[in-house]
Image 1 (spheres, rainbow, N blue to C red):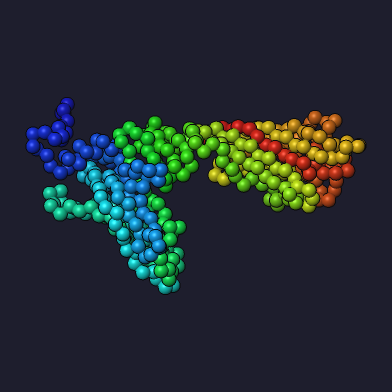
Image 2: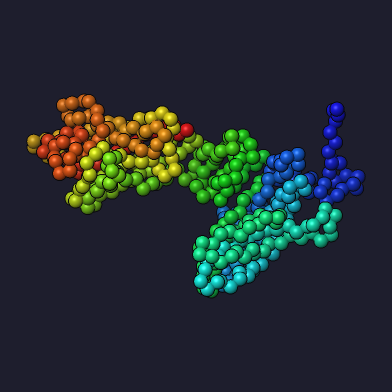
Length: 380
């Protein structure tokens, strides 16, 4: 058994360099990673110098045409068991998009590609080109099997179209970074962290995320609070509560790591209220689900009622349950002003029957004011 493992000669010394050694040396500067027994850098596009990180970006021409505009830039293209290629496009060329099919759409790809058959080949080539897709009623992305490349963009070529608009171009670039640096990310939601402690700035959500156990967790956001389309429903059938003419919803949330804070205000309008019978519920923002234990946050309900007699008019302080393994949120309130027991919020037990909801409003319904749900829970 050996107790010494020999690597490549020290880089750039003794005139003993081969192309693969040069690539391995340069790859030290770019990210980290490995594939089997072969050290590999992190592939991707080098970020540009502006807010759009425009290096190797793909854009429509102006005026629009059946061409796309390439932006000068650099990238790193890993190749299995051959380390990586550091590539530069110094110009700003135009690429032709093939004529559209007359009856079917298709998807083209713009790729940055290395063409090299052998390690010692003198015909190495770096190019950016269009891979034309197949027209179809349900078009698919072209296969890139056997191609050493990075995908820069998708171009959706609608049937019979005569020019490519910017809205038809989807940015598909992955960015690389200096070794140990923070990655910039647009569209790499499926790209796992390189290892525990890896970090990225997700530009689409303006958030900072850290990687652990092959998953990303948000730890900060320059965007702060985000809005979501919250609604109230009857739990027994899913019908939506109508807030009436002039009704409104103001729902915001913030996710930091596993801590989710929500703040939702439902305000009834002037008239036209309606609620189906049953417990009233709402839901967390799309894609967010509670863990295996239910959690409770605060809920507050204001019922206008009448001034004299009070008819249950006033504020009711309660709680909202965020159910286990679910996104459902169920507000709960006291039975009435003289009864502190808590039950699920119900506008009416039977459609059209006043004075039977929770909280109890004699002769009326517990609506027409506003409902607030706010608090912080821990996601799994």
